[in-house]
Length: 317
Image (cartoon, rainbow, N blue to C red):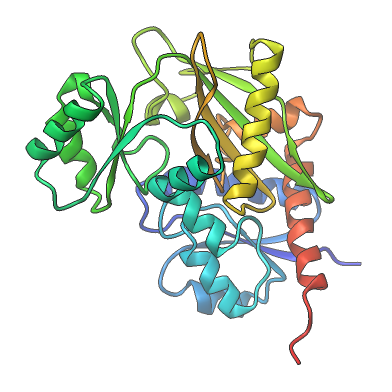
């Protein structure tokens, strides 16, 4: 019996497009090894036509940042009636917008940092004065709808400049109090009818550096310590919060939650990624490997879930 034909979609206009293409090459190769027929497509204005012409059975979006990870592409696939891997429109949109996600996390009682939200039209000097009054200078400045640390800056390096840089993306800017601690990530995978947290990872970078774009994607520039050396209760708490965050956002199939864990106190949830990176330096494949799941098994499992959903969907009347 022939394996389903899979379209791996990548690239697009996102600032993370090249990383997406690297992830897609790995996913496509793994699916071919698992026996699938695979076509790799670029996210561009002709993608709907090319998906229909390719006669694929399922779509595997490997898209980082908008408009591929924020629900827009997922909405297109819903209109085309094509099953796809990963979160749906709502979960994708909520997770991509860090401001919306934080509001949902806080409403659910999950531990998050204090923040100030700055609108794109606000003058950086006035916004900076408001941030200093509420949070002080030790803050992290982030575009609300970007990933891979794109556009991130720090208050100590010049708060007005960091705000202006983040505003260039045209979205609200999220400014959070900077909490010192270990950088921790927890991969979440749905298997059968359960949401499962995979082994916890600590991310380490050289002294006086942080897990920025270069340290994420340059081999040898960061270290993934598995399992993370955390107290047992803290380790379990990060897994619990990661699974809960996945559910609060209505994510599907898989996600990855990022934390900072201070020396004392509760782990702080930073954000959830609905399409985690699949590059040779990415965290989700490492967590799966630590759980005894090969990369080929992981991507085949995700495709299988998407197809199973399509089969269980009620037929139109």
